[in-house]
Image (cartoon, rainbow over all chains, first blue to last red):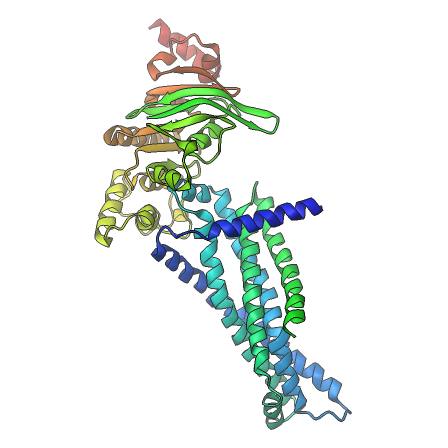
Length: 247
Length: 253
């Protein structure tokens, strides 16, 4: 078990290392990166937005319930929704969801290419397959996922507003006051660090699982599932480490 | 010309290839034939450099492939075209984009020059007008032809074909065989075909290498197949009673 983990980790590092070579043609890599930005970014806006909306709404409603019959002012709802969204919920929940959507898609795409001999075809042509297939996905994710997280954070805060103001738990003015209170810009930096680290984890792990698929459709399905499970575990582990280091 | 010298390949304890030496000649269709499990695919993957042999050498003309560094291997690979069993076309690209891919990746030609080259190759495989279709929208035979067009677009010196007729009806198989044969002769390429299609053996077998249990059991051309007394060859080629009767009839004539 321990040896197997070491073997997998070593192979993962080797694959990541082989990715950094001079591109055969920069324009082809750029074109592929733009395609990936579209697939990862545009294709995920709706799901990230929907989840963020409900997470913000639930956070606001739950916190408003906790505040009932307490001396804590109602405007704290806006403050709590904002900070919990920025520090934890937007980057972590968004990336856990993206690991499921984007990660499984990447593993299935690269694994399918392996099974259909498309990776062999690229290698025979003289293309560095690790670089051409993985690097554009990682670069695209590193740009696009932080943007998705920022959008998610905004929608989550709006979700909290809609849920708490429309039900009369807090007035719009109080919620707005909460949003403007005790703001620490450093938390936004933390959110972006988390988004970048999680983006790297979910794309690189998914690419790795897809790249080394062997066998048929059952193995491909298994690789896709493992990509999601391993990404989720590593994202949560990284979340803990970042929290320790940055706070 | 490609030369294989004393190729051995083992996977753990299992010896798949046991010292194969043969020459694949330029301007000819060289076939690798044999029963399933004979080691044809492993041999082809070693020849093309996807697998390293346990022992032995592969020479591309005067170059020993496995002594080359990564960059030098890359240069050789750009002279190689390969047609895969399942065509290995990129699903997200159209027929035209698939064929143009090697040009986009490895050349600095202008857009017009690339378009001319792609059109020429598509015309060569009789696929003019299918430019905008996706691989999923064309038949298996057409996918093979797109694969051929892609493999010759950089005008390679060496062409490898892995089971080019698998999954195709006999008529389409003949079309594919003739296409590969004509391209080989016209471009004076070294073509190596891994097959167990008997029609290919008898029609385009300029040089036939029979592998049996990891060893080279027979070498000859299509004209020598009927008269050869090699038992392994006869067992393989004329496997069914019908084909055996056919052979006897042909020999009597």
